[in-house]
Length: 106
Image (cartoon, rainbow, N blue to C red; front, top):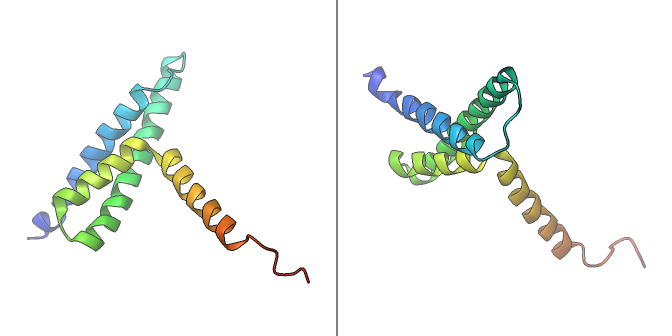
């Protein structure tokens, strides 16, 4: 029973690794084999972690495994830099909307 309960972790791992591989394939390649290996491993680990995080958030809201896994795979493929840029852009827009006038001036 516990095996079926945690089977989603296997799929999150597979989707994260594939997304990490695909996102690294479009980037420029380091010159040495050691650099390529380190680049791939760090990219795959970060993509898998991002896939797991977004899967858990999506599953909390929609409570379905397949769409949550697809959302996690999308964010893993796009990468952490893209997600951070989107969040930063939203925060700056909110600050600009709230901070149109300085509250400390008379």
